[in-house]
Length: 156
Image (cartoon, rainbow, N blue to C red; front, side):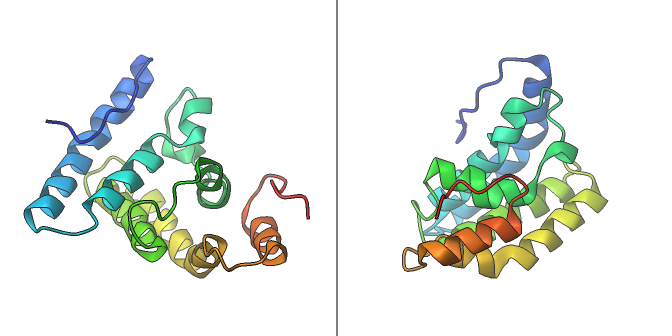
């Protein structure tokens, strides 16, 4: 039984998901077998990555079109589900692990996967602050301006 139901309305989308879903399924099965308490967080991280807005907007379904910073600080913020299935740092670790696993399996080219992991590692502190409910609006806006390539969502 699949852990993921991701729509695929085009041949490019179908091919993209078919490259990634076996890797994701194997990882989630591994977490379930080890009774990991945050399996839902890992599954949600995979879902967020594979259903990122960039892939909906770019018909090529290519990781080269993936803007990591817009994903972390815009797409996920718009979705409003960061930390839904566990602590924010755990969700962040799951995002990183999913990218590592996709890279190891060849679904993401190795140099690009290494670059994405390095960029994520660099963004970790900002990510945790951005999704901390105690972070004030001024700091949120500063993080968004520093990290996102699109104009800020917030108007502070």
